[in-house]
Length: 74
Image (cartoon, rainbow, N blue to C red; front, side):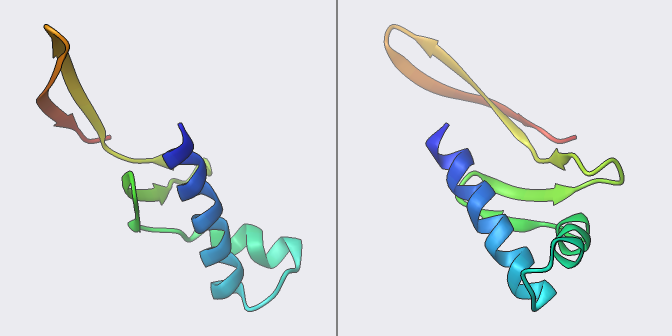
């Protein structure tokens, strides 16, 4: 969860930088234009509904060990 929070803050910082301002409307528009932001949890884009979309990694835990199963793309 901490990694997703970190990515959220970094996406916001990137949007502020791209907006060139701390004006709320400009940041909103920059956030909406976010595509393939490369964060610690993978690439994140913002869709037309302003929802974050990103691949999900499925892991299996068996006998206390993690095994990669697949990556599901939205």
